[in-house]
Length: 276
Image (cartoon, rainbow, N blue to C red; front, side, top):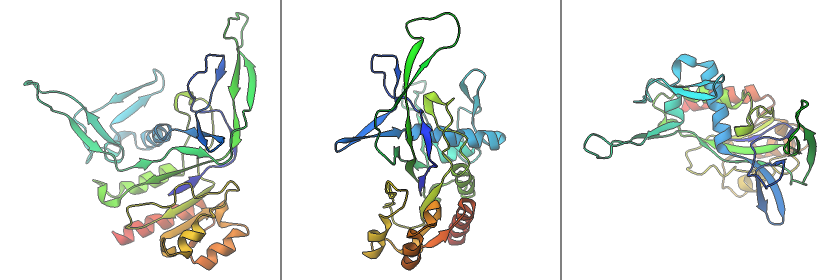
């Protein structure tokens, strides 16, 4: 599933310091242009937050916002009992009393790609200052900001869940993210989808990563479907991408169109559990 966020002014998921009083964004170069990016870890954290707030009795890791710490209920972990141990996996590296490897681990079901801005970063900065009478050398600072949308892709296999029903919880999390900010999490940027391109397939490769063009339209679908690399029956397009002029092209390609994001998720849930 590839997700395109709404438009907003991003100042989240800080990059490395540049030696000045500038709060930087993480960036990646594509040719001669720079794009801002948000880590998959920050996105996964937001999924954890949603699941922890929605199903507090069914998760192993509980986040305490008062002390900014996670607490583990069961250090033995249990993917059958806990949603997060099933979806995100776990690893506890340790030795036994005889100094032999006693690591317990599970690979997570969920795979998340880094989010990438839809448009290049042009170097916008906002000047700011700390409140209060006491001023120091860091009281004046700059903040890098980017007015853009982000696209990213998630993937999972139904057969990898210990409890398959949890795929529904994960889909609900994807469309109900509270915020994504990583170590700059106090900044709000809406990561709930404005558009979705979903592919339900037995193919091991998604083939829809970064499928949105800079105008927010998933034009990269057309050649993939036309040449037969992707079966149109596998594709669901929802939200803003299902509206406008390109919707006629999508209809001709016979992909499934959902105008609402929640309608799309309900369609995906039905298809996944109908198949299983």
